Image 1: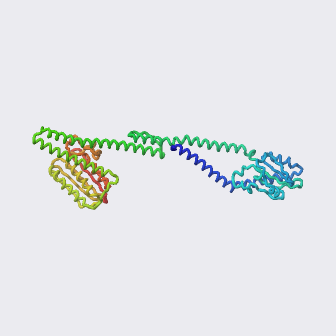
Image 2: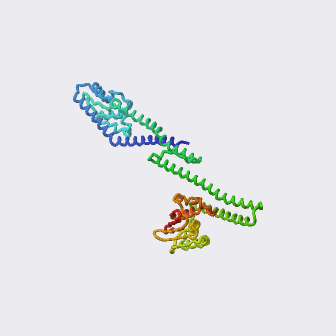
Length: 459
């Protein structure tokens, strides 16, 4: 299996090769459309100048003259009427030539090899060292026709430039490959660190240290990964705490049930004590049953696809029904009710929403002082607003941020009752959030608490 490092290096090399091919294609197009004609005209003009200069000096021998011209950086092939040819300057690499072209030039025609031959379609034809890649023109030597074929000696004229360009392109390619091989490691290294961090998380180690100072996509990935690791760590701690709390909440009543049952089985309790123990066992059994139901409710609410069965119902009547259900509790504490519940029709899951009011009202009754006041106000403005207030002991500022945490019990030093599980407010908040609303609390120690439920008009 190829590593990401190998894939990136091979990809960069492949890109370089493909780019070279496209560059060659573009260069060839530019050469054939622009430079080829210009190059042919330039050589033909030089050839004409060479011919005209010789014709102005008829006393000079052609061979000596062409030798001097060739020394200036040209390759020349001269052919007389008898088809006898002579080379001047550096030798041609390819000397095969069509005799008909020679006869055509001897007859007075021009030969434009740079334009006419098949090699003219490729930029490589510019460098071809052959007779066919020349410009031919007729010349008179002592009245006798000659065919003069001429081309620049690129090896002599731009030989150093060709070598330099060869070194430049070659070493550019080699250094590019070397730099790609080295610098790709800097790209892959953060990803390797992310892989190592992932393996640590799989092993249960959430203490991840990544470079989050970068301002690119990898830096963003590192920051998001670090945040994810922190969230997973918090979630794992919450899970462990949740398991510990559930174990504690279950173990406590089970221990009581087991102890009292054992005492009765050992015949160590009087009839009065037996009756009291049986009532305690019943209460603890109800507590376990309630805890189980709440845990099942939370598990159902935590599912992302929790179905919310929306129907239209009277919210004010639902709250009044919750007060009727809890009547024995607030009556036992002799609480005064202060209600302001105008007619309100909402759309939501009636079975879930009634659980919110039961939890909040039960909680308010539980922490209210005997003879206090339970106040419930509702209003409809831009949203539905329901406030449930008590005149009880209140909640300290340190505890307020945690009261919606699962199994958290505010003021546990004073809360000695066995009925609470610390899940009621968590369930209430989850249900309200499923309906697109929010729940908040205002409280001051010794002055009571107010829970504010906000719901959108179309819940």
